[in-house]
Length: 137
Image 1 (cartoon, rainbow, N blue to C red):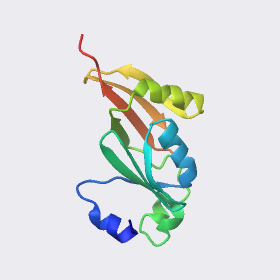
Image 2 (image 1 turned 90 degrees about the vertical axis):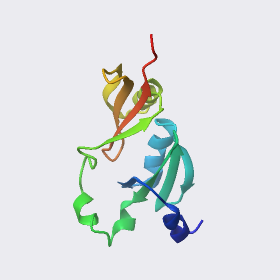
Image 3 (image 1 turned 120 degrees about the horizontal axis):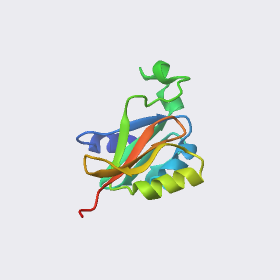
Image 4 (image 1 turned 120 degrees about the vertical axis):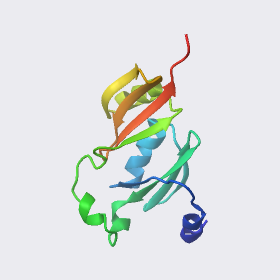
């Protein structure tokens, strides 16, 4: 699908994540989150899983974008945002993250709001929160 056809097909809320390197980011997406790569090239990727799709754009594709100056050189680009992936097993994601040396801010735990979740940081500093409902006792 062409870029313009894909862009025009989008509806509702989409998440577009700016990353330094698509291939590096895809490793986290696939191996930690269990995401499926719908499309990928050195500039752009579409990922899917858990009834959702989201996009990655490499920094160099944003050279004329208003955000290019804001994210340039930042560590922890996603400060203040949680990227929650409902239905992604937090125990499996945490185990993969630890095995691959990603930062686990908080391991998988049951929370009072009825979800089991973990808090994991990717290579670009975004915080991902895989979660599943706590099984009823």
